[in-house]
Image (cartoon, rainbow, N blue to C red; front, side, top):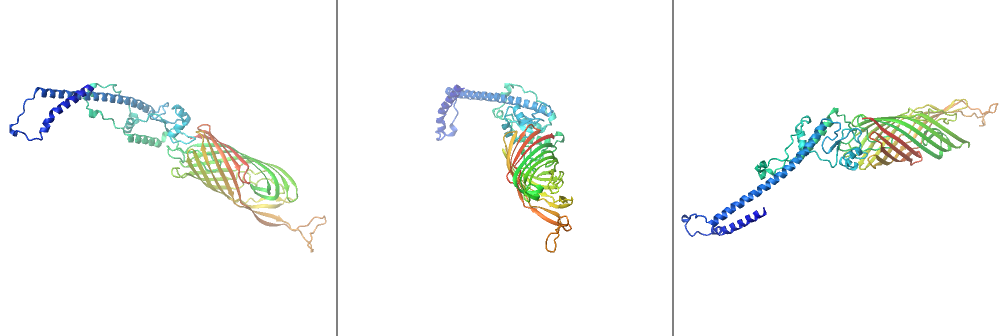
Length: 580
């Protein structure tokens, strides 16, 4: 090739040198008139130069043809390799469309989640890592998956455009494997193709590919018999909702539609203090009615609960909880009035208050934090402080297991995912309903009531909590926070039976023949009393561990930050998904 090109260059140089004087002569005035000019016969040297020029041009055209043939052969090899790749992808697509149980990849580069799959299991199957798989699919810990969900597999071959175009124009059931192309087309056909047309490559249409994939996903989501559960109050499929285990009674991420969770839990709280308090009716910590004592108290409560949580629609969740309470109080002290030492060991066992809740998610968390509206109600199904037995002096002989009044609490929960953390906050108003117990507190020696609680209005409470949850890996997460309830003033109305002593004319007490003081007829006095506002605050710390895709364990603690709060509260709760 190189020698031919050099020869051709030399010929062109010689020809240029030969014709240069003639080209220059064109600018001069001819020596003879135009009519006398003629075309002489070429000389042997001129004929030789002409023939050599023709040979050089033909040699150049042969070189160009050889180059075109080489390019065509390379193009054929590339096209054949692509045909083989598309052939394999088409076979995989047809098997997936026929619903083969063993085929989980609907398209090359994607994986369809099967029942029982976890992100770790999928990562191991495709020889990748959980972190890479989560990043490719924008998943946040603890990476919840559901059957039928499509996962992009990093490093896998992307869906071929030709297959996508075929899927766009033909139903899945009619796609057939194309006839196998010949390995090497005949060279004669390649030579006949011009250089200009052989350099044209097939047009790749990524817009068609994206449109077909989107249409397939929308069609799968609209198919009623697909059986894929729709998540309650979550972002679209490509944006996973965060998981957050909260210690507070309200708030949190909602349950997917059609999914039922059962939540057994155990709660243990301890409080001890040395203080003055009203010995008598205990409505709540620091709210008592009775005689003043200086006491040392040690109080323990053990509560076992069973809750159910169900996703009604795409944005509504309902839940309920019943509990059984075991309480034990050990109180020792001195009565201020007569310096009498006391020691009491009281217990209370029985059904606690039942709770019901309704939750609605307002937005999808894209431009504003997840906003959830909560409505919680608590029914006085347990024995309240006015239902327990008491001594004549008003001291209870057993402990209450319930509050004794209805509670309704509306609240708002805000959750802001900020991978790998989740920021949460809750604000609510707890409305405690007033009640008229007409409960006898004290009696005289004849057993007649001397003090009766007519009306009781427990103070409402303003509740707030905030904190942050942090994902450590695909199974374990922790959260830190603070919870505070400001209890407003509590009021009560009591009827007290009073007998005034009879005085003589000199203002002295009158006694009967047996030496007993004589009192006048009993009369009723009505007294309104109030307890000041109190603040109950606690620091929160908790964690959550996913045992499997259906079982999760939550552990939370609360350490009292104010005098009215329990010293410590520990809660262990399991979330078990029954069906979805």
